[in-house]
Length: 320
Image 1 (cartoon, rainbow, N blue to C red):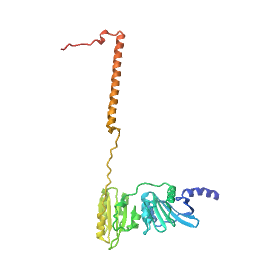
Image 2 (cartoon, rainbow, N blue to C red):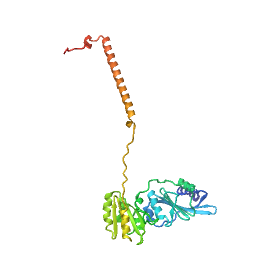
Image 3 (cartoon, rainbow, N blue to C red):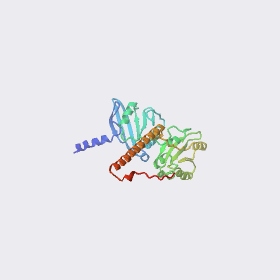
Image 4 (cartoon, rainbow, N blue to C red):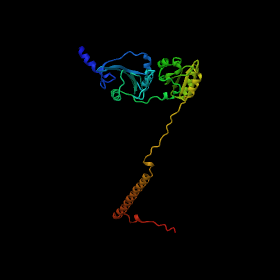
């Protein structure tokens, strides 16, 4: 009975695997689901599954950890959070960072971390092909509104709920941020000789909601806030007030207006219009010809049928 249950469980475990059994010349040795620190933050980013797999190729070894999030926004937020402070950008993917012995990258709604080995382009392509239910929706545009001057490298954080807000900006109450209204926020830390200053940019569904929320932000002790469209930028008790003012002034919402483009059809071609006019004229002439022949045949039939001889008589009034 136990062997039967084991045989039934093996396919289920195999289907639940995120990472492939082989990566290049490396093969899977073991897999586990380690406990996660700061689980409430992972819940904010809607973590669906994760696993850590050990790979070997002779004496060479490395581990790969995969986090499956609900969407690309969650993967981007997890990437910003888990990225090592001293890492540098990598060309492995649009969202990728590396250290001397680690590569971290976001692929759709997945966050992938490789320790002890940096996969080649061919190995990354193999991993991408093995991932299931990959979300390819566009990333949010909110991070682009964060100023780049004096920004501390790798300090960006994306906030989607109360837990991540408490983790990265505990001086802002969740009730003020009002995530229940569909808000998201971008966090950044900025350096100056007077000290580091944190700024957050909250994005709300409509400018009207942002107008309501900025009043609540301004009630926070030491807070300086600015609204631009649906965005609310805020810093609380900045170490450098002048830097805070410069940062807030750089936050400007730019509406993406798309003009309706005229789609050209055959109706816009003057040549087609002329040809269609000739065709219509030909059809009308055919109708006239057929109608005239019909009337003529009908009159001949009346004459041959010994009808009233006065039926075809034309009455002339002789008015002139």
